Length: 123
Image (tube, rainbow, N blue to C red):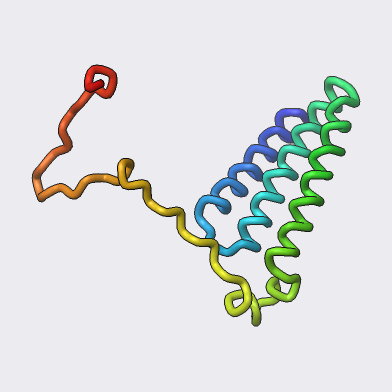
């Protein structure tokens, strides 16, 4: 039973991570974070069946964080934004992460390769 619960929890958590990384709609991102929190709750409850009640105490704290996250999501976008007719019109997209100039990939000509450097010895 523990193996199945942990596998299902890992699948749920992975779906949540992929959703957070690939979606730009704030409501969808909050739903994916909620999915990740529920996956962690499932893990805690599964371990609580094997190791004792301590896991269920952690579930209480994770649910408190999830309730705070739900309150923030309702503040960021009103509940009517979840309706299909209003989803794109009233929910602004999450802004793109600005590119840091020193981490940006350099422009290369066709056939040109990046120079190989060792950061430790370049100092």
